[in-house]
Image (tube, rainbow, N blue to C red; front, top):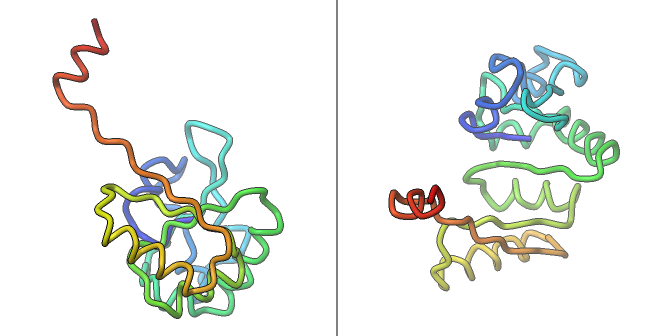
Length: 144
């Protein structure tokens, strides 16, 4: 599930598929927001056309949808971008386990992000470091 416009839309079978923000305002039904990844069997939910993450997460319809998704699927991945403490708390109530994916592991920033998630109520937190992009030297070495 993505509340951030770029990203998931790139791999959807239908890049114009409705999403959570469309559900929040009542433009579509719950079944309309579940799409397929065009390269795998993964089910995806896009941000929608009115992608204001804070307002979308505050919607009762979206809360019900996230609960239903959490019950229907073994794993639910949310890409919420930048979010306030209230939004984090709403998510933590629905899904108390979280994975924090970080691009760089500067200790103060990582600690702050970790503490913010714990303070919001996430009981089980795993931290992943995003692998650095392969540079030209790495690509040549792998090709050889």
